[in-house]
Amino acid sequence: MKERYTVGEFSKLFGLNVQTLRFYDTIGLFKPAFRDAWTGRRFYTFDQVYKLASIRYMRRIGHSLSDIQGYFDNLTSDSSLEILKKRSSEIQRQVDELLKTDHIIQRKIQFIEREIEKIGDLSEIRVIEFPDREYIRLGVEDTLYRDDSFYFFPTIAFYDAAGGKTFGALIYSSTQSYDERDWVMKTDTQVLTIPAGKYLCGYHCGSYETIGETASRMRRAVPEGRFADELINFNVIDQFVEKDRDKYITNVQIMTMEPDANS
Image (cartoon, rainbow, N blue to C red; front, side):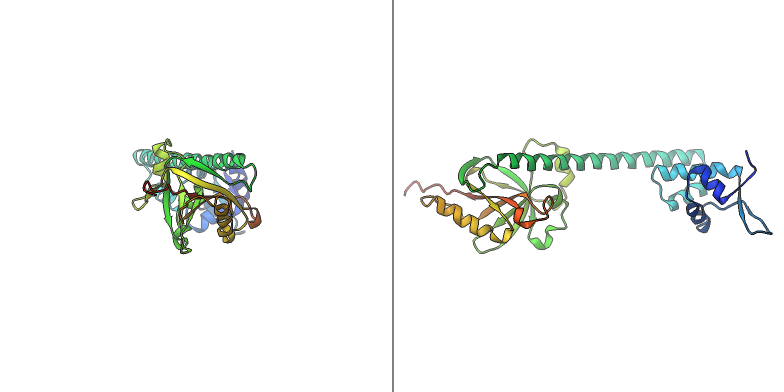
């Protein structure tokens, strides 16, 4: 092997960009062994291969440059093993988090595909009986976008008779794993239930601003029915999968009110 290497030669040896080595030099992490007094050119020696290999290794397993500097400042076999064990635990935690996130994404894909398959005639209005359905309370629109549940779970919008809106994130089923629940649970997370019962159901196509018109059409279709004032709207095709607001599809549901026993 050569006794000394230029910056370009050393970068090629490790498959690194020349600018990367120059940056390491600038921050003091990995400096050339000497500079030619006549030309000013910097050179590395072969002995420096081991340190740069260690830097590449540490970067490959996800350590920051500041972590790596500290690693070299306290380099012993015992400390190295502790650092590796700690990094292994961090990577495992990240893998677990990614797997949970992927599980949630897959469930949302299944929800959208299943709901699209159910759609026959978009103008059809019918009464459907549902069991209890759980959802995560997201609150009003001012706080909606801060909650990760909004991005990973199907959105529910509750419209009251006064025009107020609150939002929730549908929990797919009561049989889901604890880990999936744990992924979205925070100390302030509130899980609520849409009560079991019969619901007048129809589809709204278009922007959310005109959902009220669809609800009125649904009520007129069953003039003899008694229905709650609240609208429960499940996003099927929304801004996360469709850029054209006119192509949004929302499943609008209105709970039926059982007649009084004395009436």
